[in-house]
Image (cartoon, rainbow, N blue to C red):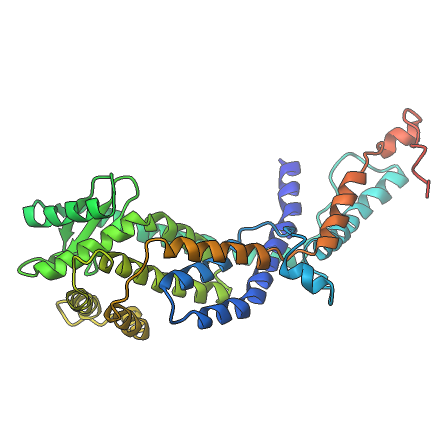
Length: 385
């Protein structure tokens, strides 16, 4: 048990360095991604979605990822940044040397009893402890919120209105979705949403039911667009990454931009089918926003009001009435994928090569006690230059 605990503690600096280095990389990428986002601010929302998704992709890539043809390789020709593998290797080697010194001294004095040397705690251990406590708390809050939504969906009553069912079937066919979609309703939550991946459910607030066929048509079509894009799983992955890097302002900003672009993409998917007019769709959006912000008791939702600028931009985007080719998203994502291959590998090519060389040349030498007893002689190449 002591051995396992020691190994866990020894791995803490590696985890802390991974998190801190990824944070440094994301902040380093932020100005470039913000410039791209500003450049394509008038373009299709797929640009915004893909640009800021690159930052989230960077946060899960290996630290020592490097390509011969990349932005980092170009920078290395003019200026060398001592980060990633080189810095990480030096820090880890220093920690290992400091931890091994007491053990070597005990071995030489003949007092070595086979126990592991005491672990030297550093600021990386303190950082990991604080990070772990915060992440655990945030994951708990997120899990409780998700369970609340799940409970509301399960307790909500199923809608068997033939008109609403016909609308759902119409958009299932338009978006070529094979999964069955259930419509439910209650008064617990005032915002419509979709839930579930394999058995998707669309939740509609009771306040929207009644003689509002145009509003319900827009709401159902928008939520089915989310179902088509599998946004439920992508939102969960995005939230997990945001929790892991809760202290990173670049992640927070990118997450908000992705959420806004996601809604605009669903708007475009619905309007592209020419089933609902932009005017009716925009009126439905305003009605849903008013319900979410004030509700039946004029309750003000500060979170919804804080994104009022995005709401205005979204309505202007709906009113533009521009036609989008079905192949435009694939072209945009292909361009951004190539851009990602160029800007995301931020490890030095020289440093990664040196690390690989060290690993290849590493050899296993006999134990100190075996050498002292004469049962295993020293390797002949130990002192060769």
